[in-house]
Amino acid sequence: MVNALDEVPADFLFALGTLRQARCRSELHLEEIPAPSRLAPFAVALGAEVIAPGEAAGAGAVHGPAAAALEPASGSDDVELATGRFILLHDPDGSAVWDGEFRVVTYIRAQLEPEMGNDEMLGSVAWTWLVEALDNHAASYRSAGGTATRVLSESFGTLSDRPNSIDIELRASWTPASPDITSHLEAWSDMVCTFAGLPPLPDGVTPLPHRRREPS
Image 1 (tube, rainbow, N blue to C red):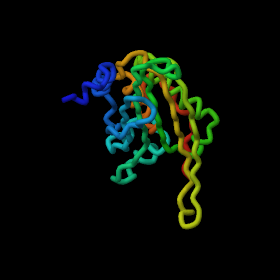
Image 2: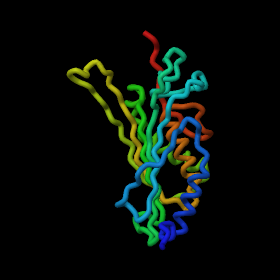
Image 3: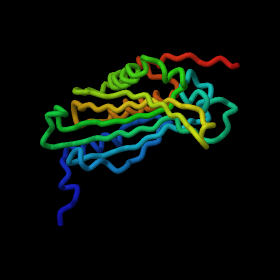
Image 4: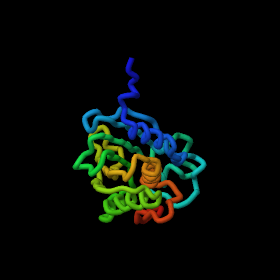
């Protein structure tokens, strides 16, 4: 009888083991989710969300929904600050598009304060967060690419009392230099927390420029 694991390439099994070794921030809740089946012969996917921890109130400068969620008087309900997906693809035959046998594909989304969402530098700062996070974790890579998108949500009719909101979305992918993915997942987890606005920002990460609204 053939064991299913016998059909999985050794490099991919090794990569899965390195993912389990990653040390991610405690605010980040990770779980395995169904992986896309058409992008590569082998794939694994992780979903993530950042929930505002009550003990983080007053821990430092924050932005986006964290600025309101971490106020002492904000109540006890958990607040989702950011969500994301981390997908590792593997093709034993290699891919000319990837320039390698592995490819990391990621997605991050977080809500921002209106004045931050209107900042013309938002997209380039979001990309800088990715590059600097990978560099800070010494995650060697090549052939990186991505798209940063601002999403404006407006409500009408029976929902017109809801305030407008602006989200930032970053879709990115890169080719890791080796099957050891530990540092790549750790870098990505820091990125998700940075998008969520949680302090402290890791050394070398560029903070998003913004102005805090003065109370009326």
